[in-house]
Length: 167
Image (cartoon, rainbow, N blue to C red; front, side, top):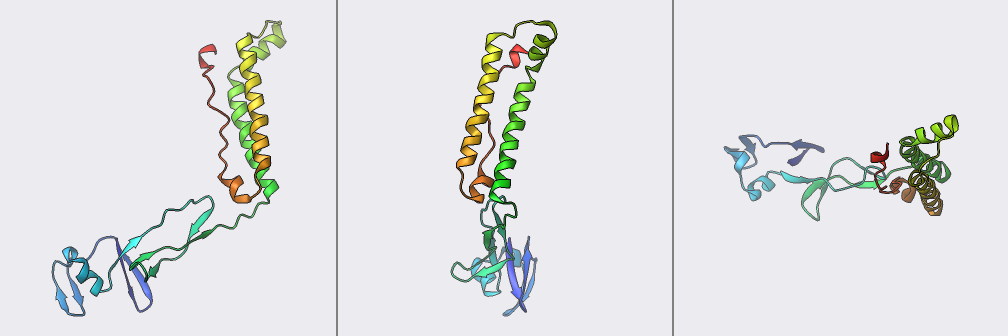
């Protein structure tokens, strides 16, 4: 992808024109012209920087004269939520993951309440492990001190041993 500035307006070309009326006359097969010819006509590569859309945003395309290409400046996003609000959202995400895991064995708990049938020890252990992991993740979240770190924190409960075979 190339871009070119004309009268202060940058135009992006996903593909170059087959011919071009340039500063040195009409150029046929412009699409296959050398980098030197393209640059002499003001066509430069467009380089999109890598960025994390959760915490960064891209600005309007501009020419980077040091590197001779067009690019998008990136800047930090403004995060409108407070640190406490962000932490609460992450904690809720952890609890939601835990509830999904616990739901797989909730019927054991219901059966125990309804019929008095004992919950197998491995199920009790797994459920306790899930609750412990929630507490650990909430402690991790509480230890985060910047909005950026909270936004980047991923709500992974843990890689549980599969209890699906027990359901």
